[in-house]
Length: 103
Image (cartoon, rainbow, N blue to C red; front, top):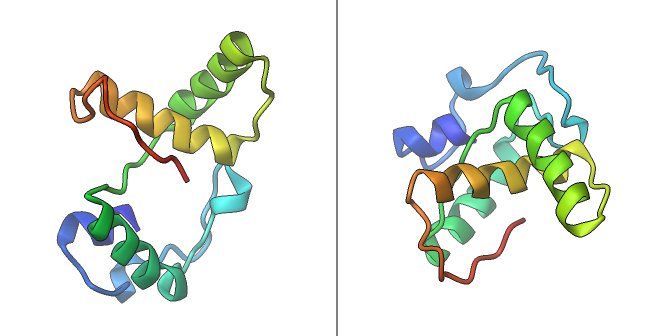
């Protein structure tokens, strides 16, 4: 979905499909997100949001941070969203005073 978003694609195209996705965030591994992407894209556009990727290292660090700071043991899929917010904040893409929703 991130690649499709970055390319400005309205739908998932064949080159966006990953036949055998691998990673630690099992709940969000989708080889073909075609049915979900158009809905997610609309929500992201309407809210002024974006799609962001996160590396396994960033995901692991975000998971540990949630545990250390909040005492919450989140799964790797949830940690992916947290990692993306951290990444966007560090890159100054998110105003530190902004109210955001993390899916």
